[in-house]
Length: 383
Image (tube, rainbow, N blue to C red; front, side, top):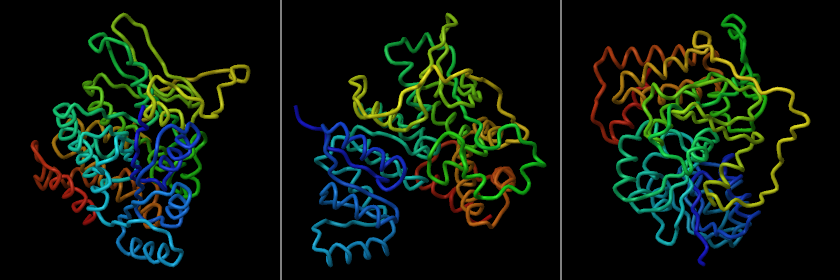
């Protein structure tokens, strides 16, 4: 049996590095190409270790710098750049699987092109479905392409649905840890520092996703993503807080039965499931020690203090390009917060103000393409 050949777009980030680790641990898939946005130091380490011959770097200046490093060290590798480079990798002829784990809207076009090229898509880029789900999912069905979710919540739902009759599903329950500020009031959040927002109690993630977790915006994005992945109406997708991050999501069926996927808070497990499906592998991961678990709590999210989640449902109801606008506004706001240009509570305020402006300016479209989606980022940047 031939080994799957894997391309990793976003190889230097949290998901990308863990994907490399899982494949190396199991050892029966081959990584044939890597791509990153700008972290050429980490990429160089991966190229040396994995001996790949093809890479893409989105930042062209960094790509030129990387070429110089490889030339000086006599490392033979083809270096592509910009969006064309990412797309070349996502359609790489010899690859059978493409992991899209880059953060942000730059993951949309490579995902679409991977689907067109009939690759198995391992999707850890929320923006692809949040912004372009109406484009990607019909294309995947047309081309009979598997889109395997890698986010822990969507992987959990996917695992719970495996072997079940989709018509028997009553609702999907997406769990949230609540982040580092669960239970805090608006007044207590006024002067939150970047370092505090990056201190997640359970998960080790990239900076942008960690901030999204703290604001609950990530749950809004995950509701949008779940709608597209599982063809589930938005009003049948519920968000609950599960502080211990043991239950990664649940599915409720018409007879009242509920299936939950439970495990330690680790992205290695959903990555492994996306790679190997039910042929589960030993990946040297910790197990739940039930002797030390004294409770599993369930609570409701506070949609007043953490209005980012409420605004997501508003964007969903408006429809058209508004989910993409919501995502773009959040990307810009989080970047500005991380750069200490705005305060923590300004993130949700910025999203709310931008959504109102988009509606007021009558820019929404019910039918749209990728160019329209990219326009929403330009809109957000100008505010």
